[in-house]
Image 1 (cartoon, protein in one colour):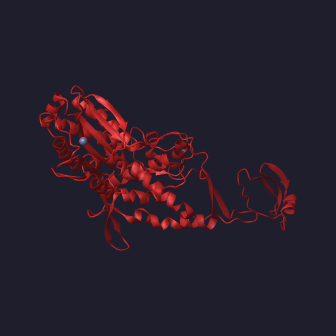
Image 2: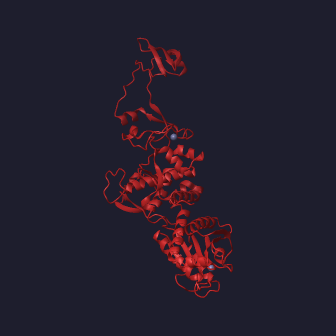
Image 3: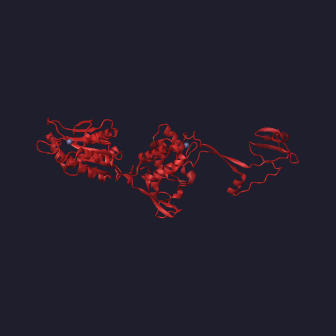
Length: 481
Ligand SMILES: [Zn+2]
Ligand SMILES: [Zn+2]
């Protein structure tokens, strides 16, 4: 599948001292594989892809920390230690490889262009593995108050295998890393370790007479015997310290395990993001989508009939269906192109094109869908209205048809004569979704007259564009009445 978006990010590769340009959506896929287990719930994966995209766009827009950055690139690849192309996960994912690749494709496509904003700017979308019960206010971690990075309770990551963890660190390591020296234990020193060794009593020789171990009293002799020590003149010194931790990461922003659990409880990505980031808005990145919302979509427009075709309807006044169809098709083509779609036309002039050739063009170009445009004719001149047909079982065509019907009948105030199934040649002999639209009746003099008016054609075309945007959910601001 093609990407909808042309937005690119410039990445610096220090090892080769070069800058590469990557498409944002492609890079999101790689970063998704790199930053979250693929076993997570799809809504948690969507959260993560929105987070990644938000952070990348923030970088491009110059909102992030651009320390050390020269103007030629947005980020250094060193910020993503261990990142690799998706193909290189073959060995790691094994038999799940193709499943995971499909999952990534789907998640990134479904969140296409979506980012998290605060006051209309992409946020610093921080995240961590496991918060351990509550996330953290930003100022407690790095000193800056960030209004959307507030502490929220999170009881959702308790089941995570990462919530309780420990690390054994040798005393030597601690000394080296903290640049300190622990005092050397001498046999006569009373080294109490609270709750482990307390109340140590020694004689003048330094022999342990009595002590408490974990609150229980022992004689020195007993300890010597039970632990098999050589003498009662003993002391102790830890060689390793076990540090226990709760949670993983700095606790700022979204808790990945918590997000996963919320997803399993049925929450959608948007709700989850709204939970962890306070007061944010989740929406399509405007720069990406406003100008070319149909970028990457492939659509075939079929102006039905043309030349000398016996099926072409004509009114008693001589208005030809083929001409109205072509006029709508050409206008629709122009408007779809303006929105970024790739449009193929079965004809752009008054010529005869056989149905088989039209079907071939559709099958060859594999559009997202096609629309074949017609005008109706019936003996009874009082009948008017719009009809739309789709091939039985073609759910996408049915959904698109339904939206187009609503938009057209509202825009030009025609009667909704129904969305119906049919096995017309093009609907049947093509292997993509398609709809057959009969906009109006040339047999009805009022409708015929309207169809000859270019403003009326404009309204039809605008309604169809709005419908297609709505179908792709890039025109959500247009209410579907
Ligand atoms: Zn948590
Ligand atoms: Zn027709």
